[in-house]
Image 1 (cartoon, rainbow, N blue to C red):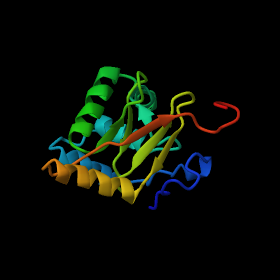
Image 2 (cartoon, rainbow, N blue to C red; image 1 turned 180 degrees about the horizontal axis):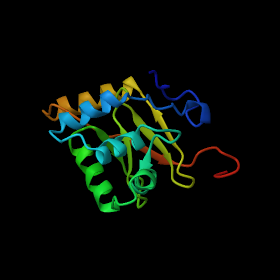
Image 3 (cartoon, helix red, strand yellow; image 1 turned 90 degrees about the horizontal axis):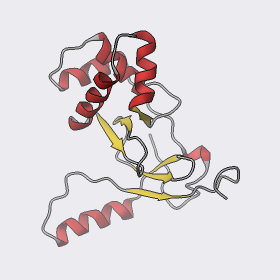
Length: 163
């Protein structure tokens, strides 16, 4: 899936990309890659992350989706599992200031985020110039960069929200 590159109109709603949906078989493989038993509750949590329309969801969002099907599941269980999926690279975490951490399945190419600090809108983008500069910084400081997170914060141009 192609994610729009900066700077071409990156605040427009149409640039928010829909999440690629994974099959149940793919989700089960993710659990096995974590050396975990495939359980209905764990699978339900991954399915909740795999369901639209929002692709960046909080642990509370996931809990609300999952508890409808499994009323006995606890919030702490969902939260711990999300943290574990992040540790294994199944999900990525997006932290927006003091707001709750948001999670997304890592099913697309590497990308970055622009976040409106007023309304919470999140836009994904890719930019080769930024990627090249990150590699250069690593080389200049004798590092081999394995992973990075690049997030931009500001106000979107939505006239009903931020202008």
